[in-house]
Amino acid sequence: MKENTSSIHSKQEFLLFQKYLFPSVYILVVCLGLIGNLKALHYFIFKIKRKSPSNIYIINLAVADTLFLLALPFWIHYHLSNSIWIFGDVMCRIVGTVSFANMYISITFMTCICVDRYIATLHPHTYLRLRNTSLTMMVSTTVWLVSGSAMLAFMLTCPLSAKDKKCFEGFSSKEWNDLAPYSVCSLILGSLLPSVVILVCYPVVAHRISQIKNSTARGARRVIYGILAITVLCFLPYHVVHLVHLLSRLQQNKEDDWIYYLRRVTMALVSFNSVLDPLLYFFATGHNRLIWWNPLKHSLLDESSRLL
Image 1 (tube, rainbow, N blue to C red):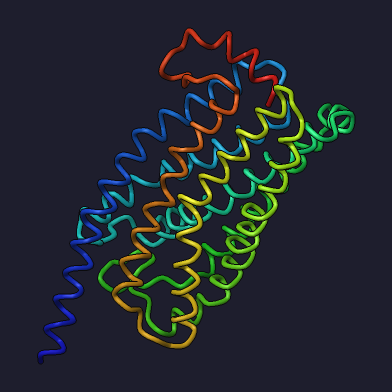
Image 2 (cartoon, rainbow, N blue to C red):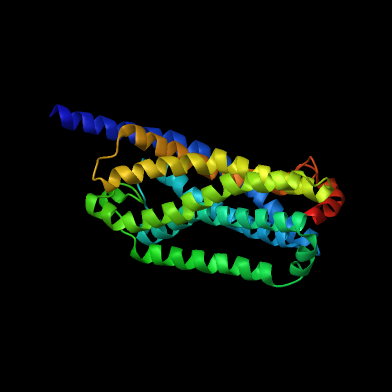
């Protein structure tokens, strides 16, 4: 009886923790993120007539962030309702998949931006030949096709716990075993590999670019440092905790309370990348004010955006 009472108290504490953590964070992220990303889409689509490869990658990144932000109101309602999902299994699959896929899509396009800046700075003649080709559109289309196919496969085949109207929570041991292949693939291909590329390769690229003294190199360094900051602040904590959690579940161990709380905190941190990405877009132009703060700066940004 004492053990059951303790379990009930733990469950109530978990629900209360989620109820206060996620809505407060997600409401802030939606308000700031939508303003920044919609302004970014408007500026880079309609204000810049001749789009560079980085502009195209930025547009795709902003689209991914916007889709993620449109899914957050469902999670806000879910957690405010004491983790009771009322929108049905189909919407749970769609909203859950879009939410988790955003992280991997964002990292992919950040990597594309970094590679583009590297080529533009260290191999300008090659870059001039490539920038007028359809290579950028082909890369962007490939990212969306691969991501979309993986998302569709996950939505159609992933197990969902129907107990207590949960959404992507409360999985049984069997459901965790069914989820294991997805978790392992996402951890290796979507988390560990991109993290190694960003945390190891980006500083090397930044060091080589720092040896070049021109405005293009300065802009490229800002882009790379911004991506590194977003990775360390938003993505890396989640990847580490997700690895510990996955190893624990694969060993058939019950999730410890501390892992549960860390997973929730790091999941909330991941959402902040949709707020920080617009800062990356505009600070990377070399101008020190955001477009949505001062519309009169468009003409200056038109000039500086050519560096991207």
